[in-house]
View 1: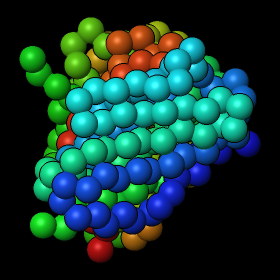
View 2: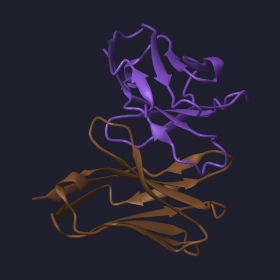
View 3: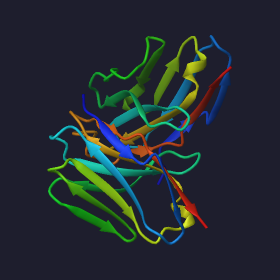
Length: 111
Length: 116
């Protein structure tokens, strides 16, 4: 079935450094790839998304890249700050209305 | 504006009891999703409502789980005869139309269920 794999499961970076989280998907028909951030005790919140007609999208310190040929996409966070500490989920559009979710990456920003 | 709200925020129950979890989606959103998130895990899809269409119940883990959505707005998720493995955070999300899975899903804060 459709699957999204996300790596790493935990990522610890020094404040100010960059963080990269990678996802691969299996369904070649997927054309929408959102990233959600979940802070402790809260529901996930969309932070950035990309559609298959573009290869990269940037919003201030966060960016997402997409390689449709290889079926993988990545989240890049530059100049990390303590408030970036959270769990990040990638997802890919599946059949009909469904999103296929990655397992999540716990990002820890060390002061 | 008001986001997705869920109640209760926390629920502790005894094994074998029934529980009802409530979700109030964003006004005007026709699509509503329920997910389950076990400790430190990802999102497990449970059920999907879209407008007046029949819900997609394909993610419900057993017949102890059911959900309804009244008047196209508020939804309740019911778990009968709760088991300890039902302990998790239950998340509700809504989106404007829910078509093609390409819309932003707006999540509530979740209900933390603990079955003793």
